[in-house]
Length: 572
Image 1: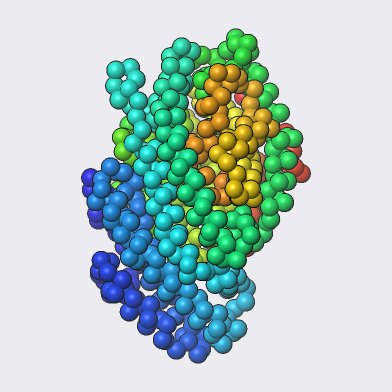
Image 2 (image 1 turned 30 degrees about the horizontal axis):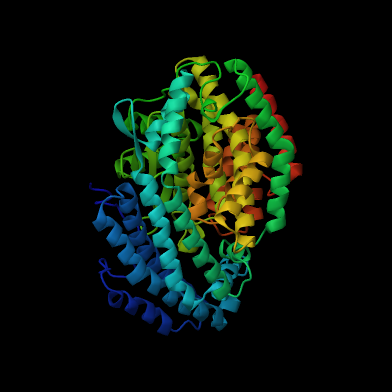
């Protein structure tokens, strides 16, 4: 499978040669040593040094991204997996140590004090934080953690079930949960669940190993809990654990009741006394599943049309991706689960990966990842690579806002008003449903990493208790084991610990962007794009402010947004 074999590069290298041999660290180390030894005794010299350092990291990060992309596109290919692991072990580990030396050099530079304090505030803060967190003993542990995480991807990516006479991926099986026939939905749900549960012991073993590694990483870095270490590692400078608890409280108070109300209406429309897990995705009027497109080509073309109606610049950016073959969308066996946008940092171009099976959700996923892609294009001219990447809490505002802003143009995919409104309503209901799930996953991770030494049974019991707090009204009688292991399907818990509340923070921000657009579309889109162009050059609250929204994710923000969302749903 040929993926990204001819990647266009618009930005010339100024420090590095045109080609680099990544087979041995000895081929790369001299470029770090040159930077370590260079004189930076003036502001001009220091800034040029920063740009050269940025170029070096851009080139190396892109190589790592390319290897990761190729591996996730085919998890069964041993050579692709070996290539990625080889990069982690032989190159990435050494990069971390070499970068630590350069970070110290930057912090020790007398010229640093003369840099523009506003321009370099965020960068200074981040470098200082990295230096304080860096621990030589953790370098190999982080590589081991990455390899174990890939083990999770490999297991999930290879899962298939035999259903209706053919082998199907778990992603392909999702479409059956939208079928009007309840018996067929039940059979599909049971087939997928039984297949997942066969991997329970294996997944629990991987997670136990990850827990031990992460606890050791935190201790090595001088922290009593991995939670406290993670908050600084994720650069959560502008909020603390208590703010997360405030989010949990707001969701429990204002979102969960609305989510359960919507489920009660669903049960009534389906004429069911009780909802079961296989009743949650089907159309409540028992209509056939929405089929917005026939193939990935029409999916891409349709999304380009939608974002172009929001702003003509946006479609031109996605057309660049299309011409450069920067989409890999179809679901197939041995493809890693989920979807993501990866930045190819030297080319300053985005790549979008997902598992499309032809359902309405695929349309949302591509619009979401397209929002991330637009963020990459918005910051292409920023010379300092670090500032081309915003905090994840705002990166997700870029993606989720695009989902909502583009909703107005669903007629690109749906020719009749009934299907259009149905898709729009399903999206808004999905927002109401996902916020409690985000709160549950985040609360679960807070508990996991502040209760070291807990057992697998205690972990399962905690998950069930959180489901009682944040879950819906569906009945799990006879399915207790499936409920206990439901968290296994959330890859972030395995691969990206603590990275999940960002989606909740951003969803509240995106709702604000959308409601602003209903009052003044041009102004809201302009503010959105202006904020995206800042990349990561300003602190998180300033990025939100530039977008015309508040950086607050407590009950006081959640309550009015849910009220407006409920009114919109009632209108539909």
